Image 1 (cartoon, rainbow, N blue to C red):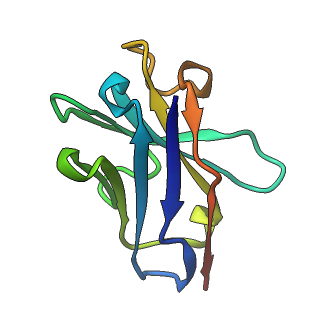
Image 2 (image 1 turned 60 degrees about the vertical axis):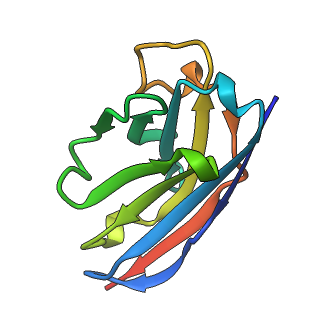
Length: 125
């Protein structure tokens, strides 16, 4: 089992920044990929970014590329999502997730085995 706890959400004006954290505990050695997803009202959960836990390769949705940065600190078993130049359309509940089967399909929520509780990000104009 892997437990994930997100933090860092909040209310921010458009153009501002937030950093989300996702602390993992339990069988962290089994994690291959950490992902961030978001869910806007009445929308399906969508991929935001992912990072390979071992090699550090990163992947981004086109909508956030150049504005968001995913990173991880293996010593702290924590993944981060630095979000800059936030827009109102970034408003959503953000979830981190852990994938433990070495799947190459990092954009599909179905490939992830463990999820955090979510943290609200609200961007106002």
